[in-house]
Image (cartoon, rainbow, N blue to C red; front, side, top):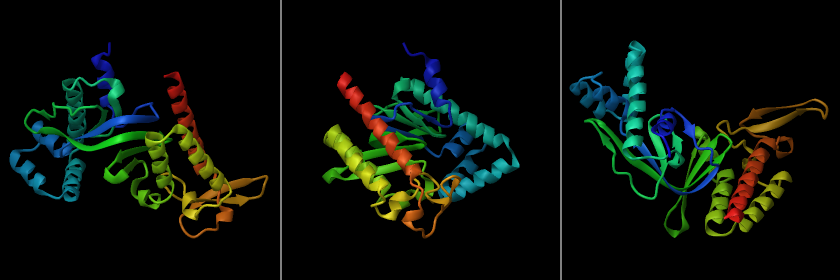
Length: 273
């Protein structure tokens, strides 16, 4: 039997990721609406007039105003932080969540693997959780978390946590490969997925791909350049023009090995079942 302490410990984190590396299901992101000002108002740290004023501002300006408040009085930060944790706990308990359902916890959001919509979303007068996104697949590769949903006409929508503002650099390259791979896993066979990633890896190793595939698949998204001789080698990252002959391919090769490991794990699950 799952104790309340297990789920409360998980949702109390500002950042949490499930140990599961690949999950096919229905993963819903529940986001606390305007978390900072909602908590401040609910806990009477600001009055109703100031709450309405902040609510009327565009999000970027509102965040700056909250930042100035925190800079002048650190207690506002503690109120927001403690309040968000408290209401994430209330959300988890009210919806009878099990630890195995929690895929990810962000500061003010909880990603829940659930076949049905949760119903307990409003707490006290000002706190409300909203379903923000629904994904069919979650794949975790190193420090990145990939959420993919299938749309109509076989469209796939992909969101990645961990690439930051550089996501667009990978959309038509490494990220497209991963989306295709997930499509094969979900809608074809694991054997097709193995063949696809094997062929891609061979092309990658032989530097037969467009250079954009060789950007590191992380938030820095740089080209790693080999320097030195065969005895003493080092690498450094650049963002500009570079010859493919000089690129150190090891970072994304590590990513490809992680993907191969995930496929092997999925095959083991299938064979056991």
